[in-house]
Amino acid sequence: MKTEKHVMVVGAGIVGSMIAVQLLDLGWQVTLLDAGFAGQATRASGGMLAPTSEAHSLPVSWREKAQLSLQLWKTWLERFERMGLDVGYISSLAHAATHLQEAEQFKSNLQSAGQWTEDNPEHPHGMAFYSEEGSLDPVQVLRALHALVPVTQAEVKRLWEDGHTIKADTSSGELQADGAVLACGAWSNRFGIPVQSRQGQALLLEGEHVDHATYKGRGYMVPRQGATYVGATEIDTWDTTPTHGARSTLLAYVQQHKPDLQEVRVLDHKVGLRPLLPEPMIAPHPSLQNVLVATGHHRNGILLAPVTAQRVMQLFMQESPPSYGVTVH
Ligand SMILES: Cc1cc2nc3c(=O)[nH]c(=O)nc-3n(C[C@H](O)[C@H](O)[C@H](O)COP(=O)(O)OP(=O)(O)OC[C@H]3O[C@@H](n4cnc5c(N)ncnc54)[C@H](O)[C@@H]3O)c2cc1C
Image (cartoon, rainbow, N blue to C red):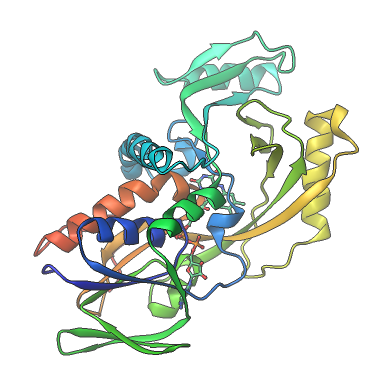
């Protein structure tokens, strides 16, 4: 793709927003558009940066990129700090074992990135501790990114080529640019990308009840600036309604693993649609020239956003770049 001057980025979740900021950093003109659909994955996310402890949910070809992304996050966090913005970053992450067999399994999976500890009385079977991993508040990250690049509220209904120009039919009228990035998360299938939706629900509880993100049993808890995020369910649906069933499941999880927390108040019930592909796709659009696609990050889009944005920049700067991930014809 040749060097462009004005790029439309469709989707202001973490992926589109980070890409938009990097394009601005290049000195390009950027229009970041978002429809404001219910079920945005980013705002519902746990915000864990866990390339080693989430390795099982990453395609093998993405594990190294995930480690690189964790390194790139450090630069973003420094940037937000320089802006005087707190995005709720808390270093360290643990996997607590619930029984001895699991402890043995965790120990054998530790790799050099983690340490085994049996010092915490709350986790008598021990836990794998990853000091390089951590968590942040994705809502605060979006706020920081949108301080750098404003969001135009508009739904893109159709995108087409007109000579060397990309045109968009939007809920606010027609727009045109030299290129576009589709970062529409689970909604990318409108533009011919076969993304599925894996819905997740999570609760935000009053009070900070863990020191750092902790996986245990079938869920996890993450400290979130005076609150605790508890996640998450997984179901293949496009429905964005919070359900009583998910709330009960998550509260039962809390009771099981934090029995002293029975009367805790629920501050928020989040629902997000994880964009699911066999692996993330960061590639030219299969049929539209000068349009890139960045989606399909499933459980790891917060972690993978920096490496995705970096890759999109490389694609824009090269004439015939190799793609990452799925190829759609
Ligand atoms: C419960 C839950 C927990 C999670 N926990 C973690 C975690 O701990 N760590 C991690 O790394 N990842 C986690 N994830 C995954 C992560 O949230 C996603 O992979 C990531 O947020 C995807 O970002 P995105 O920008 O691609 O999509 P989204 O955040 O969904 O944003 C897409 C945006 O596109 C907009 N849009 C769509 N179509 C159009 C259109 N036609 N016109 C204009 N705008 C449009 C939508 O309104 C939306 O705002 C979690 C997800 C969930 C649901």
